[in-house]
Amino acid sequence: MPSHSPELLGAGQRTQIGLGLGSNIGDKAGNIRRALNLLEERGIVRLTAVSSIYRTAPWGFVEQDFFANACALGETLLEPLELLAATTAIERDMGREPTVRWGPRLIDVDILFHGDASFQHEQLNLPHKDLFNRAFVLIPLAEIAPSLSLSGRSIQEAAAGFAAEPIEKWSIDESGTQSAGES
Image 1 (cartoon, one colour):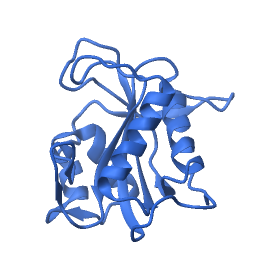
Image 2 (image 1 turned 180 degrees about the vertical axis):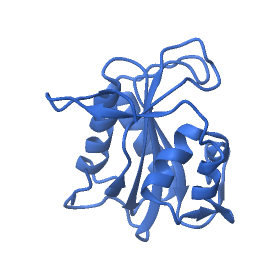
Image 3 (image 1 turned 180 degrees about the horizontal axis):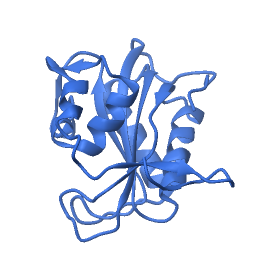
Image 4 (image 1 turned 45 degrees about the horizontal axis):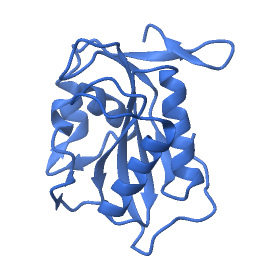
């Protein structure tokens, strides 16, 4: 999916970022693809890598439908809080509505990291504070960035610790849409 968006928004330095995306309402895989397209169309990020989409069990609030999850790497000129505002706008514009914490959502776009530095703010902590506790983030992120280390920890090694988790890649059917399938 990586493409070349014409212009990036922002006046900051070009910075590598990681994003985690999830959906468990409607066309889950389609919602992720739409969010990725909007990120590029709006000049928020130039995607450089996108993981497979994975079928994952709910986390936190478990009484809900399964999720589709993916990770993406890209470059942005936006500072962390500007990037947060832009990803939140995409969630809102796609129709995400407030719900219980970790509850059902049409789309969720989490900023996993913004460059090498840590960032602490009441609205955003980077690297993402739960990144190393979530198989649905670590496994897709390790797929596209196996040599990445954050806060001195290897993504690949952290993902290996979740090898027994019930996560499977979605397969692409003949119509070109993704459906849950065996990995």
